[in-house]
Image 1 (cartoon, one colour):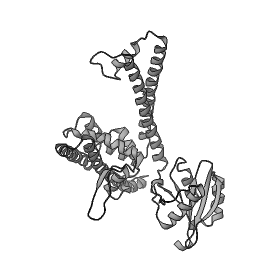
Image 2 (cartoon, rainbow, N blue to C red):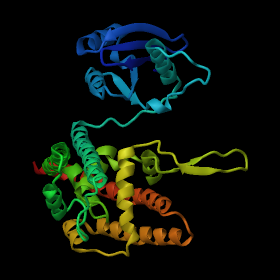
Image 3 (cartoon, rainbow, N blue to C red):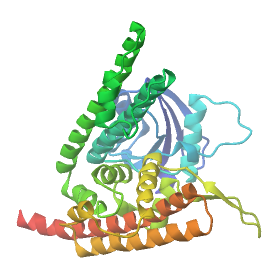
Length: 380
């Protein structure tokens, strides 16, 4: 079968696609470029032969997965590959679209490319929403910094005991007056930007609640189960599911840790072993969420009213995993702090181990959903 396979490399841009083909035992050939659109792609597939013989790949990028869904809809096996893991020759100093397409086709034929997970429509929609909220939070932080530093430059400080960005603080900001009219204009502009960012986040969070409620049953079950963990509420759980997809697609928890980029880098040779900082070669959104959640494990294991409410309808195996996580991760935190390790490094270590418990809960819940799926179909 492999002797008759054509490996196609596509260098995809907004306006055009460079195409190259590699067949077993032959040189890689460039087929030129085609416009990036449904009709040209359909004509290309017809020209290249039976879809059973074709294997197509292109790099993940700003054009998303539209081309992937189009090709799979035509019956073509397509893979989206990780750009950072495409082999590069150290002496190669010429980069063109044609050469990039040829390199993809050649590496694809050799089996040197690593495919990325392609989200389905439900996961992609949820991921877009949680990333929009994340962007809004960053914009809010910038807007608050601008307003806070502006007030500080002019010697404006709230009375003692008023915490920043509380309702009392905002009332104090609105009461500030400047002698120069221009200063008042700047203050009102910065203040309106802060309030706009707050309203934007509230609106997105309401939409996120609706999206979780309307998500497929299997996805919603995992989101609910992940909230049994300390430090992970609805937004964090939805972000994890949106960024990772099915947690059971990872055969082992170590692979999920690697996917997050929270594992140590390593440079070893012979008997010499050297491990450095975390690789950060993974999903930055997932890594940020678990590091934020890991700070909660500084505290003694306990189940407060909020966490107890989140765990009300969950199964006992999920609750047991969450309780085990509290003991294990708090003990790990105290152990590393006692050794004199810096707190940020300790929290990163705890976050990496937290991913193991996230994986365990995901596998547990997804397994239950698969067992219940045939029963639901028979009931219908």
